[in-house]
Amino acid sequence: MKVIYGQDASRVDLTKATLELSWTSSRGQIAQNADINIRQAPPLQSAGFLMLFSGFEPKESMQFFHGPIVRFERDEKTSDLSATAYELSWYLQKNETSRIKLNGDAGRELERIVKATGIQFSCPAFGFDIKERLSSQSYASLFTFLTEKAYEKTGKRYFIQHLRDKLTVLPEGGNKVVPMFQASMLEKSSTGESIEEVYTVVTVEKYKGDSLASSVTKENAGLIKQIGRMQKMIDAGEEKNISSLASKQLSELSKIPKTRTITVRHEDNNAARLRAGWLIKITEKDKKTVTDWIVTNCNARWKGGQYTMDLQLERRT
Image (cartoon, rainbow, N blue to C red; front, side, top):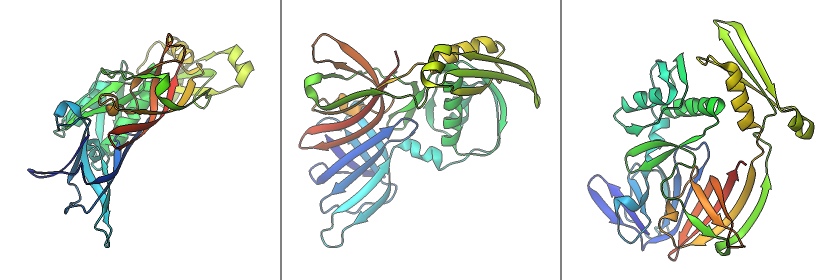
């Protein structure tokens, strides 16, 4: 691990002075945050950059955190400093759009608008068109609005993968490096399921102006009997085949996800870069079964050359 502080062109290696270091990410959270405690820290400034590297050298390919310090406190007796930093995409919530008009694939429109600010930002097509004029809002709010629409209409969730100042939108599970953990590495593991985001009925409505033009409702009768009626309303927007949309979304939203909470301790520098949205694999106790999981929450710590990660996981079958 390398812990570097940067201000303009200067760089300070804080690795040996770091007393505590942790970083977290969760589903729906655009930027990771990192908390650090530094022994007798040198002078730091707000908006100076914290850079974390999973390795012994500060190589860009191993950097997993890059962003501004947003608050800090210095102990007047010990000169130790505690600070919180956010990844670069934190600035997406600190800047607002003017009134904007969207007309095209939602993902491509998001890319167009964010790139116009000068940020290196790439986003795949979301697979549905949007034609709408929106009020002024933060770029983070725009990202959330459109990715929630994507989940509503396609069943896919998205997150932002950071590489220094380059931001890339990926579907959950779209990470190229897939960590593999052995069951023997898990200090804790508990499994269950959740129906918090499950729906048993989906209704898609299409409007013409302010008037309802058509509506289709699809139901999972067996699941209604099992867990109750839970109805999701979807505005079809520019979608023409509303029956197909209702069926597709019911198929996705009526799956009851398996959940898992684990604590894993490891020294894998590649796995240290994992964040909410990543796919991971676990080789189970029988050493034959390998299960796939999406990370929905990651709380990681580094100390003495080891990473300890509390992970909340999900998979739909």
